[in-house]
Figure 1 (cartoon, rainbow, N blue to C red):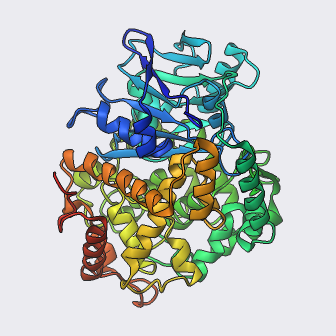
Figure 2: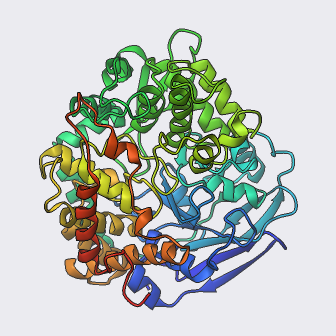
Figure 3: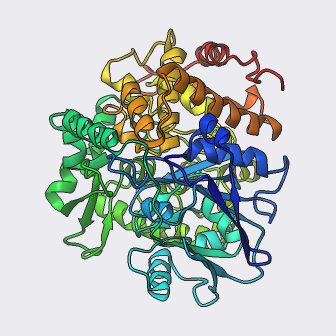
Length: 585
């Protein structure tokens, strides 16, 4: 085969052994790499009903056939498991410099299974596997851990993925970090590593995977760069990064504020991309082979956080801590962002949980939690969560457990146990379908459907035709995640580009229709995973407040009937029954 190595690496932490296994070409033809391969392996490897934090769960890390090539936007890796947060299908992706290093080890996937009896980190290369004691690293934050393991391995070009105290303490939304500020953020992958006493994985090597047609890949890369030359979206990423969305979402009145009770933030301009550029030192950064330079290395210039530096903050972190928590200073959001990165926690879930407690406190439902706007109180609560102590012990279990234990089911905003991103479905109704049907919970990245709704491609307030266009986006971005491409290239990499890139990588000549069927196969596989874990149509549901509490002076709301119409259409177009069950199951 071209584009793949045809083999995976299996790590058993229980006995500190490793084995190389071959995969047949038919698997790659049916699923490609990345998400396709990861999902195939999840269904094959995991028994239904296992505890996500037990040794029976597995962590699967994949690259794709685009990884390590000249193609822009290809420096991403994927992580797959059963989520400790939702108990369902879990996927998460991260950029930075790790993915090419994973590719150079000579494997298409790494399966981590079992659990170590003492902290360990594992060095993986094309020359073999080395298990290292990590007892001296247990308790260290992610930055210190990354520095330490790379220094100890001492290989030029090596890259690491690590966990912090949150992962060690089995916080169910702990994430995996790399290059300090890049995160496989959602669904609790860091907790899976923590349950296995796995502090880090280090990748290096010199293996190369031959492409079928390097000239075709080079031409495809040139074409994408040419498309991006004068593209306004590209210019926005290059200038502002994702902070451009603060102004966009407040303009659309779909920016979640004060824990989902408002569609605009009262002082949102203080959190905007313009404020970032005017008041902070900002330098653009990019992943390898990328011209978007969406990363913004930001340094706080004055105040109590002067000198604090990080890559960010991203829009989702600004919405979560700035919008939902009512913290209207970017330097404070950056401070909380840095704290989450060091501790190894997903900022979306963390910000949502803190804001839920702020709202519950304001309504007199709980006592002893920070009030809206209290950044220092939020920071103390984040520390408590990461160490599963005091008031943070319950919050570390995730929003479903918090809502049940404290009687906040009527307030809590989540789907399947995962909180939505910063796009309110009462305004962008297609995002309601996206949140409801996502196998990992309320996900905005599976189709990035806010883009067609905000750009005028389809009326955000309608339900007619929404499922069909949503599937078009979902299928194309599913193929993205098999390659693996950054979803920020969604405007530049269309179906014909994917056909050419896959041919250049693998030599396989798919048609657009065949790629759509491949994507449908992968989406259906994620559905099958959740179906065997007991998920039903009832789980494809939005939180009650979206149906009962309009925003923007009563103008915007989504109804259960509207969601049902979109669900019916979605299931039908996917070929599933009216309960969302694929045929033969």
